[in-house]
Length: 105
Image (spheres, rainbow, N blue to C red):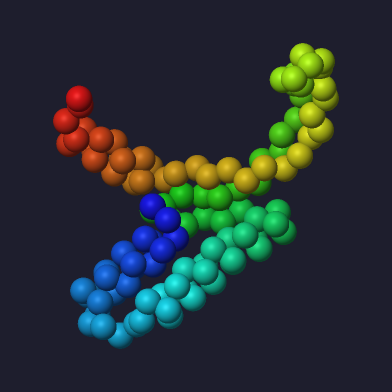
């Protein structure tokens, strides 16, 4: 799903529940503002908790040894912060339930 698909789905949901009160352009601004707020909070090393959805956190990766794929020489990769997402129990249960309903090929 792309951001455009997300905007389309949110606009359709709002139109279904509250009537056609919001345009796609306004909905795109809301989605962009939300994503910008998440990015800004993570760049400031803040955690974001959305109840029923999950938590965005910054995790510190340790220094580690890797290999240059071209030469095979060992290379040290520096420690750095990385963003991670931990889904809530409700979201994990929804995904598991949806996966169970889909027949396996």
